[in-house]
Amino acid sequence: MADQKGLIPGRENPGASGFAADSTAKVSIKRIMVPTDLTPHGERAVNYGLMMARCFQAELTLVHVYDPGNTYAEPQEIVKNLKVLSANLQNKYAEINFTVGVGPPYLQMPALAKELHADLMVISRHHYTCLERLIFGAEAGKIAQRTLCPVLVVPEDEQAVLGST
Image (cartoon, rainbow, N blue to C red; front, side, top):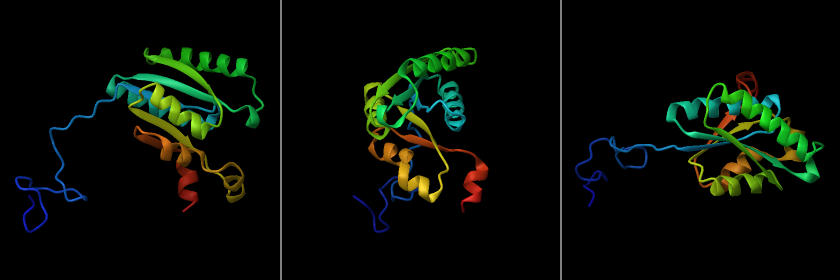
């Protein structure tokens, strides 16, 4: 039962929601999923994912979704590139693997996160012009809205973010 200030009895520091932060709560992140489009834009998310995996000693899974209607790359080329990227990253961190999905990324990424039991998804956001955003949509936002685990959206670069404000 709340007191007259709307606080929960026995709790001194309510958060923005009116509930106190539980200082004994622990965050357990054992599996991190990093979608990548295998371009330099997606490299920042991979680097953040690698850093997070090291911090939490978590398994890192790189994911690429092949959308046959919207790509020129061949599936074999995608798998080859993911193997090379994974091998390069394994020099820095051993718990890395990859998977490939097929279909629209905004539908496949959340499904793969659930299938992989991801505790965190780290995804890059591309800096699109207004026209590009109308054509391509805001993929990171659509993916984050449909994903059950927490999603860390990494900007393409600081200048793109600062320049757009």
